[in-house]
Image: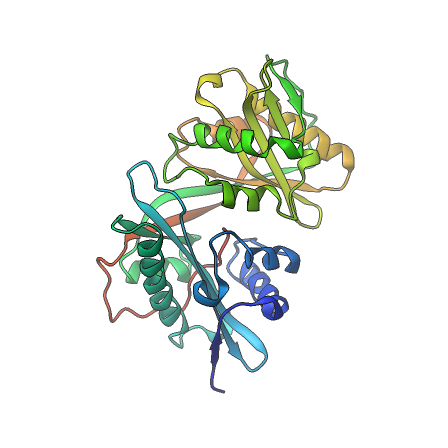
Length: 331
């Protein structure tokens, strides 16, 4: 049957959800989504589904999808990151769909980066999946290289009891009015982290107001004057699993155990609900703050390791490269 290409739209969300969750199972990423969460992605700041997304249909079944997201700010090197993501159903791989998706995403990424940041160099970032994955093979054939590894850590809930350390800060759950203060703290906390760029107000608002956030289980460490010193922001995307979206400490407050205290409070709150069987998070395996050691002290163990792959936009690709899959998006 001839395949039909379109963009993602609200009517496509049920089929898109089915495909994304199929890929999460087939490729071992565990990146499961509810339909309502994917629907939110279509409304993110600066993202136009008509030009920045793709859906490939075999009859009434979606068999591939893709998305492009271009940063609103520049990274520490003054460059712009374009994130490409998507996937092809296992039974439709080997037909050149992944190659065509990658071609179209790369072209659109260059175009959008030029519109948003004229004259600024850009690069493409993709999820290279697990070791031996077809995603990693595809992107390697297109000239991408592994530039970093990220660990998926997990901890059972309730698990071993967690002590709440005494720290020189007030621990509270975030309130609606804390959005901007936490954004500024986050930008300070991650200014020295690999591959990051400051969060602009619009995209940060999308994250802050996302349906899956669990602000009641998140934690801020506040200074006596109310300033944000550290934070743990948590969400729930699938049943009985808490996901830690962000953990950070501003540079001048590091070394006081604040991140550990925030995470310990969040774990205790989550365990008390009896609504979760585990808590997961992803962490840079080379985090400059030694974050993996912090998580291990709190009972987390490494479950899987994923690769981030990258290529300068418009350089190094073999135009005749072929592939069969692009990795599932997790933006």
